[in-house]
Amino acid sequence: MEKPFLSIVIPAYNEETRLPTSLEKIAAFLAAQSYPAEVLVVENGSSDATYAIAQEFEKKNALFHAIHIEERGKGIAVKTGMLAAQGAYRFICDADLSMPIEEVNRFIPPQLQGCDIAIASREAPGAQRIGEPAYRHFIGRIFNSFVKVMALPGLQDTQCGFKCFSATAAERLFPQQTIMGWTFDVEVLFLARRYGYTICEIPIRWYFSEHSKVKFLRDSLHMAGDLFRIRWRAITKGYER
Ligand SMILES: Nc1nc2c(ncn2[C@@H]2O[C@H](COP(=O)(O)OP(=O)(O)O)[C@@H](O)[C@H]2O)c(=O)[nH]1
Ligand SMILES: [Mg+2]
Image (cartoon, rainbow, N blue to C red):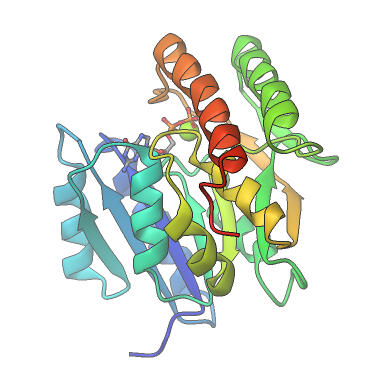
């Protein structure tokens, strides 16, 4: 089979309601593109039919692959997918498609040139957040202030679930990822800066989707702790130079 130009990596946890529609949309989108592609759905810890749905797609469409892992967390699912992917560009994509999939072409050549990493931003000039409750936005902004102080000065939105990595960047960064939960983005981007990869922010239209898997109190505390873990690991030279 031809080597994919684009790999779409979808972490999926208890997504039986949102996943089928999203996979249909992605299949239709890719069928209309001229480049070879693949889709990796990485599931862990679900108590519903998420994995079975991914397997069904794998059976009926050769571009789709279903992966199940035991260890829990979004971070480990993304890491597994990004390292199993074969594409020249590897795109992390939330199962809810809160960014319309058509936008993916703005993250890769020929439309985007000279970026090792392109991250979707809901804060960059021109971005739109549609339907998001004010309190959710506010919590996100507070977390971002901590992220800027602790790890990534100047980046306005590290937590959006749509990010594209060149194969070279992915293969250098993801093996070093140690954060297996929600804050993995910060760690990977922190390392990316350290190694001198170019990070471009792409303003997107982002549609709020109900049924977030983020548990506010528990996850916020854990995410704040992760920021300290990243700093500590950097200070104690835990990351490869
Ligand atoms: N594989 C896997 N995916 C996860 C896990 N937690 C969240 N996700 C996925 O991460 C993506 C973002 O989750 P979502 O609930 O939409 O978060 P929000 O957009 O920040 O509210 C979705 O595709 C989820 O299915 C997990 O533990 N494992
Ligand atoms: Mg979401």
